[in-house]
Length: 382
Ligand code: PMP
Ligand code: GLN
Image (cartoon, rainbow, N blue to C red; front, side, top):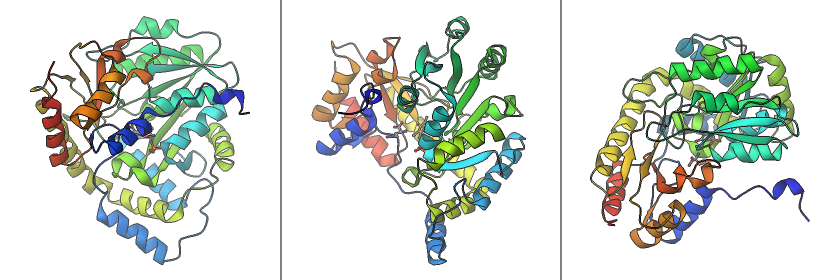
C-alpha cells in the first residue's frame, strides 16, 4: 500500500521513550528538551507580534528582520559575512533544514557519510532521498574518529558528509584539527558538508565553537544549519535555518516551498527580537547550562554509571555495568522499575556495537529534576 521508500524508516526512539516515560510517570532525562519554559521576554515579544496583527503568511524564505539579524550575529561571532537576501532560509526547525537540504542535494544512489552515533533524522532523510548512508564511528571514551577510516569511507559516489558539532548524543566538540581534516577531504574529493550546529552557543569550559562557516568562508561546499530551539530553550517553536551559497539556497528553497512554504510569523518576529538581545543573554544561558552539566556529571560519578564528560550540547553518554542486557532492554527496565527515562543509543549506530553498552542522558532540566533523576539512577545496583 505505502511507498517502498517508507519501509526503511523507523519510529523515532525519542518519541518512544517519552511515551514510555509518560506512561510510567518516570523522570524524563531522555528526549532532548528543557523541562522549563524559555525566557518570558521572548514569549511577550510573540504575544505583542500577534496583537500587532503579524498573523498572516511570512515570505517563504523567512521574514527580513530575522534573516538580517542572524547574518549580523554570524558576522560578529564568526567574522563571516553572508547575504541575508539569498544565502539563508528560515525553516520549521533544523529538522526541516536538514530535510530540505538533503532532498536538494542527494540524488538516488549518492552516498552520504554519517558519523555514528548520528542524529536519527540524518539517516531517515538520506534514505527518503534515495541516498546510501555510509558510517564512520566516533569511538569512546573521547569520541574521536579515525582519519583513515573517514577517508576510506569516501567513494566516487560520495556526495556529502554530515557533521554535527557540538555533538548529540556524545557532547563532543570537534577540534580544529578534526574539522580542518574533514574540510580538506571535502575539497580533495569535491564533497558537500552539511554542518548541523544547533548547539553552536552551548559549549563548556570556555571552549570556543568553531563554525564550518569559518573554514569554508565562501560557502562553496558548506550548508550550515542551526535552530532557535536550543539557544532560547524553545524547542516547541521549531524555528531553524540553513545558510549556504545562493545556488544551493535556491535549491533548498525549492524543497522548502513545497514542504512547509513558510514558518509561523509571530514566532519569527519574536526570535528576531531574541537575537537582538543575544549578547546579554548568552553568558547567563551558558553558565546555567554549565551548572547543569556539572551537577549531572559529578552526580553520575557516585552511581554505577560511568559518564563521559561532555564539552558541548546538553547531552552526555554513560557506560553501564554489564548485566546481560543491551541498552534498549536496560533503558526500558530503568523506566518501568526505577522510574527514570534515558535514551538507548544503539539506534544511532550501524557499524559499531559501542552503543549497546551506553545510555544517553539529557541535562536540559531544572536542578531539582536533575537531582531527582540522579537519586533514581543511584538506586540502580548490579
Ligand atoms: N539536530 C540535532 C543534532 C538535534 O539535537 C536536534 C533536536 N534536538 C535537531 C537537529 C532538530 O532541531 P529542531 O528542533 O530545531 O528541528
Ligand atoms: N533532538 C531531540 C533529542 O535529541 C529530539 C527531537 C525529536 O524528538 N525529534 O532528543
